[in-house]
Image 1 (cartoon, rainbow, N blue to C red):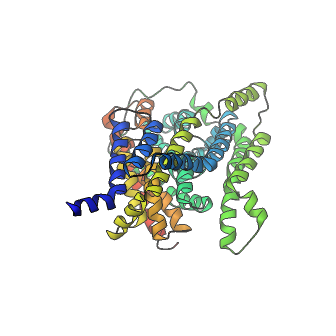
Image 2: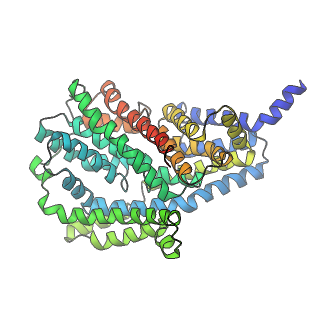
Image 3: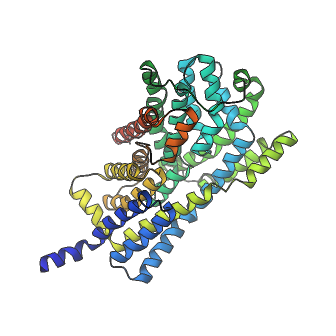
Amino acid sequence: MSNLAEFLTEWQPLLATVVGVAGLLILIIVRRVNAFAALLFGALATGLMAGLSPPAVIDAVTNGFAGVLGFIAVIVGLGALLGVYLEASGGASAMARSIIGNRPAGPAGIAMGFVGLIIAIPVFFDVGLILLFPLVQALAKRAGKPALYFGLPLLAGLATAHAFIPPTPGPVAVAEILSAELGLVIICGLIAGIPAMLVAGPYYARFADGRGWLEAGGAVPVDLQSEEVMQTDATSDLAMRAMAVLALPLVLIVVAAFAPILGVQSEAIAFVGHPFVALMIGCALAAWLLRGDSEAGKKRLQDGLTRAFEPTAVILLVTGAGGAFKQVLVDTGAGKLLAESFLGAGITPIIAGFLLAAIVRVAQGSATVAMLTAAGLCAPLAAAAGLEGWDLARMVIAIAAGASIVSHVNDSGFWLVSRYFGIDAKQTLRTWTVASTLVGCVGFAAVLAMGLVL
C-alpha cells in the first residue's frame, strides 16, 4: 500500500495531465464544448488534480495566458491587417493570376500550389479557398480537367502555409511556447513546406486523376467567365506591388535571424527584423501601395479593415488558453516527468511533438488546438533535451506536420472542401484527407532530413 501511495505521489502531476488531456478531448469531441472554454477548464482541472493550490493554479493560468498573448496578439493583429490589404485591394488575386499565367495543365497545377502557399501566409485557409476558387474553376474549364485537379494543389498550398509558415497564428504560437526563433522557423517551414505541397498537391492530383478519383459534379458555380478570371495584363503591376508587400516583412525577419549566425551584430537589423516592426513596415507599405485608386476600391478596403479583427478573436482566445495549459504543466512539474518518460523511452522531442500533435488532431479535428496542446506538452521536453536554434525551429515544424494529417469528418475544413467542390464524404476522404496526410508526413520527413544538415 505504501508503495502505491509513493507511486501516486511521485507521478500525480503526470497522471493529472493524462486525465486532463483525456477530459479536454471528451469536452471537445463528445460534448462539443468550445475549444477556448475546454482548454481553460482543462488547465484549471489539471492544476488542481496535480496538487497545486487554487491561488497557484490561477497564477499559472494568468501568467501562461498573458505570456503567450503578449507576443501573439500583436503578430496576429498585424498579420490580419496585412491580409485585408492584400485581399480587399485585389492584390492576392492579382498575384495568383500572374503566377498562373497561360501555363498548360501540368505546370499550372504546380503554380497553383505555390499560389496557395503564398496566399495563405497573410490570409486564413477558408478565405484563401473562397478567394481563389473562381481561378480554380477557370483553370479547370480551360484545361478540360476536374476542378479538383487544380483544387488539390491549391488546398495543399493553403494547408501547408497555414500550419508551417509564420506569421500565420499556429506556428507563431508554437514558436512562442517553445521559445523558438521566428526567422529560423520561417526557413524551416519553407524547406519542409515546399516538398510537402508539391507531393500532396500537384503530384497527388495527377496520380488521382489518372485513376478517375477527381471526377465530380455540383461544384459551387462561379459567375466569372474563364477569360475574365485568367486576364493578367491589367493586374501585373498590382501583382508586383502585392508581392513586395508580402515579401518585405518575411525578408526582414529572416535577415534579423541570420545576422547573428553570420557574426553580424547590429541593433538596427535586430530592430527592423523584429516581427512586430517588420509586420508594421509591411502594413505601412501596403497602405501606400495597395490603397486603391477608385472610390469603390477604397470603400472595399475600408470595409475590409473594419472587419479585419473579427476572425482573430477566437484564434487569440484559443491560443491564450493553450499558453495557460502549458504553464500549468510547467508549474506542476508534469512537463518534467513527461520529458523524463519520453527521453527514457528513447523518443526524441521532435518525434514526440509530431506524434502528440497527430493524436490530438485525429481525435478532435482542429489543427490549432492540436498544435497548442502538443506544444504545451513538449515545451518541457525541449527544455530538458537542451534544444535550441535550428532544433527548436525543426520541432515547431514537426508539431505543425503532426497537426496537419488526416483532416476528416471532425474538421470544419473537410466539409468546406466537400461543399465547394461538390463531392461526397467518401470522395473527400479519398482526395482531401489523403492530401492533408501527405502534407504532414512529407513535411515531417523533411524535418528529419533537415536534422542531418542543420
